[in-house]
Image (cartoon, rainbow, N blue to C red):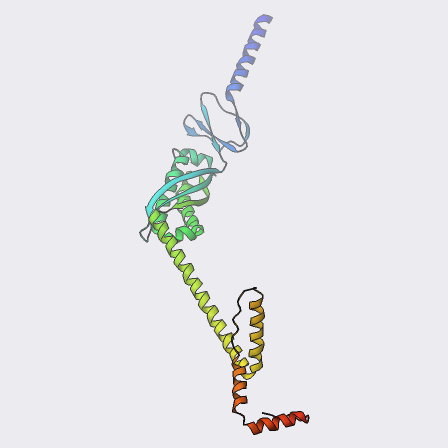
Length: 274
């Protein structure tokens, strides 16, 4: 009799152990468990940790709540200004409702991927080439809104969308390079013209100042000679000063009597004017 009781107890213990092992489940910290009992959703999503299900009756499906990084394949399209481009992007999203992600859509990853591709092609057709190249932040926000609207019904939240690369045809690249080169040359010419204008104004002011003070022209000539001599050239061409010619001309126009009077005045220590 005792042996039968011991055997029954061992059998019950073994059956309990087997049942516990079959019913035991572990949900990780970044997961949520969705339980289906006889095909119907049973209760709320199971939190992280140890949980039990009814073997053969319940089915536990785990859903990852981590942020998923999904690359969007390059999409080819024509922009609003009739330029053919290829654009690829990357989508960051996460599941916020585990039950909706399992029940409302067959595969939320595939659904988000297809929605991102179609939205990217739509953005390409609505944008100009300059917007794709320089105004990506605004396009990223518009693309995020286009994907996030249907994704909320799938229990998915779009964290952010980033356009990675915009591929242009070779002919367009060469045209843009020529345009940039022409624009840089235009700005260089404008800067040079402005510099010439400012230099001409300064030279006009300098010429006016030297006209009022002829000796300043001689000083400037001497400074130029010093600057040229510093280069150690073998030949130095010195222009004849115009003021010196004018002085000689005035001296030649004086009569012999004036020169004699001027010489006498200098001998007595009383110089006279010309």
